[in-house]
Length: 317
Image (cartoon, rainbow, N blue to C red; front, side, top):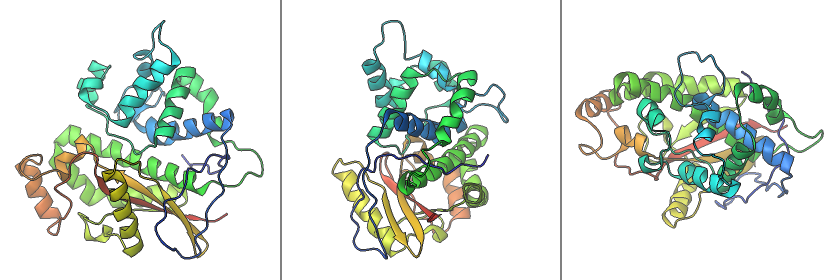
């Protein structure tokens, strides 16, 4: 389904300073109305969450996570306040762990969900929307259009648009990757990444009308090595993360294009292929990595480290 890119006016939280960029321009900060918050929450849910947690009844290929309204039911009872709900949901989304799992059956069936690259403000917005809206299939069909509606004449928020494109692509790749691991083990994920990840990313880029790529300072595939400007952002982002700060996306204009950088951080699931050799990565997966990627540099990570970045290039409207 085509992703509509009519984006409402939403807050710009500050662009990380990475040195001078060709024709770089800052976008003005704007306040969010409640309607804008709802639209933004819906867009994030639609692009980042529904590939696994869709409310639709009929799912091609089966589900890879419980639907949103079922998740809400496990966090809300008669005495639950909005503040309690938002706190519990936010805590899990910021750092999913087995100890925080409320849906034991879903955990046994689907495994632990990966950590999503969402800001604290975005997570709070999603949790508040979940509390106020029980997104069953019927209610989602009524609400879905709101995610794509904007006030006439509002300026495109390229930073948020790029983020939604990155999240949408990550969601599709993640769903396929989790399916490969579930059906064949972590070594099957290596096979998927080798043969399907780049074509699937290119397909999503065409679908979303943008240029999309993943790059790293420690690539598995040498074609994904970051350039000088991307390496500068990666170094600064790693510094932010090591100091306990939240990594900020970066947006700049170059040659009539709007280009956004968005962090990719590791989680527990990543360790199966990107963790410490012998401790996290089994022998069969090690063999498959060596076979498919003889120049691999993408191991030795721990959870919550910067693995690389999404680079999203958009036409300036």
